[in-house]
Length: 444
Image (cartoon, rainbow, N blue to C red):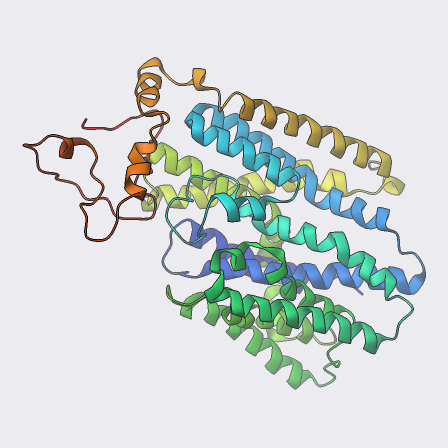
């Protein structure tokens, strides 16, 4: 039960590919698999703590959720406030309204369902301007932890074999759902908790001793190397056409589990590498780095006027979140993690502060939704052009009535008998207009 610096290092292995992938660096084409690693780590660490408390007769749901509040909420609240503040100056009313709605969904830990319903394909175009899109994974974890601690408490008096069997069964059902959903419901498969539980469950199985201890150092060394190879291979080798998550999420999850397993009774070469101070430091800021990196990228895209950022801008968008995450760790996160017994905030203060902060942010989000993104923020000229098209949805109703064999949906010049169209728009959302920092570009 001792501290595992190699797991902090594994967090770095998870977060760095995510950040680089989102920033557009092609060297990590499938960096998003880092989120799968986070699920395994979270399932392992939290189950390990809960199992120990169950064993010692100290289990308390209040204590568990207090720890979650100390760990998750301070940095999250800061990011939400920052997004709303910056969005006031950068986003159009419709975008700002969407940000406010997603803020409410994030506070209620249902943003995965929100983005599944509103944003569509996580890998598709059109989601680059959703500042809180990345909070879907946080919602998955918190939904999981609404029920899992209670399950462990109910199973406290059962044998270890029973606990292993039940968690393994739940995880296998979840994995089976995910595999089937890769073709039947790919977007739901990515966002929704039932298809994601198995990654957390794999970490839980490690924590309750489902895998035999690796007594031989050579066996641990081989398992650790295989685990690292599976993670790196997943980042590099998964192609654009590979259904994900489903079966293709198994290698990164299994790789993370192998690395944790290898270090449970041995110190391996991979474990020593992960436990090196620079890698551990990145792991320590990984949560805040994950929270900050995506809103920074969205702000840069709005400012730049394109979803594809220049290399220098992308590099800045990688290093700036590192600075923000470092400040967050020392100024926000660590003070709230100090227990009351060591001079920190009491449990009552944590719950009261969290409830008050969440209520204030939620109230602000509701006001912004009621105000429809506060159109008065927008310059008069842009507001007039927006009002001209408001309610028309760019002739979307006409486009929907387009049937095979008939003329395609035409907008603008094609309405004139003597004008030939010069632009063809392809895609699922042909009327999506990308507007950058109050610049409205239109020929007609």
